[in-house]
Amino acid sequence: MNEVRTDEEQVEALKAWWKDNGKSLVIMIVVALVAVYGFKAWQQQTLEKSENASALYQQLVDVVVPTPGANIDENLATAKHLVKTLKADYADSEYSKLAALLMAKMAVNAKDLAKAEQELDWLLSVAKKPLLVSVANIRKAQILAEQKKYPQALAALENVQLASLKMQAIELEGDIYLAQGEKLKARTAYEQAMALNTENTAPAILSMKLNDLTTEEG
Image (tube, rainbow, N blue to C red; front, side):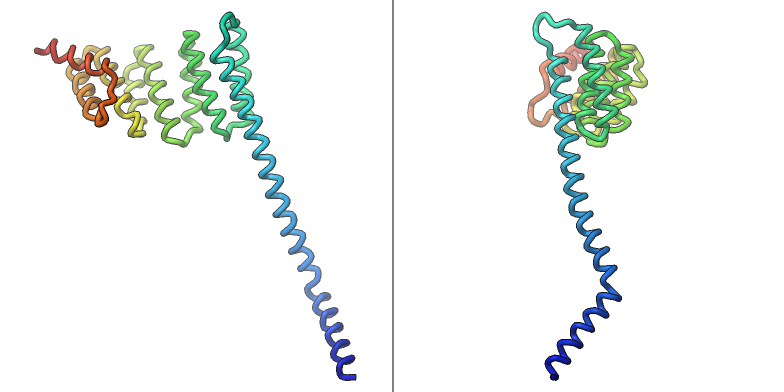
């Protein structure tokens, strides 16, 4: 009888516990399941978005590097459409940022410097990685210098922080000073660029620029 009573007591205890806690337990289980399956769905959605962005970017690359005989105007129109789609639908992906760089390159080739600057400004408004920020600022400085907007070009170069691109940025700074007739500042910039050439990777043209200024002053 004691065993029966004990079993009955256990059953009653379970019933009482379920009455008090069963609802919250079910909710916890449901929440856990939703979290697990929700995370998996998010992962799948993220993967699909990345694959879609990658496919669009590859189409853009194919347009930027066209086959012989391709229609340049059609390629430019297609590129603009692809970049617009990437920026609108996949703004958080790196593909949209790389697309802006390519679009800026195409715009420069088409002599549309305003469009190129616009693309780089968009990129700089969203990019966080030092490499992209530095590359975009160097290209923007080149475009601004081409338009003789020298103060703005120099300001853009101040935002180049990536060490591996510092030499290129300072050399461009020298070019900008030289374009303004400020030879002393140009020479100083070229010397600073050469000083960063610790692995002897400086282009020969940098040495030529520095030598030319040294010869003139001599």
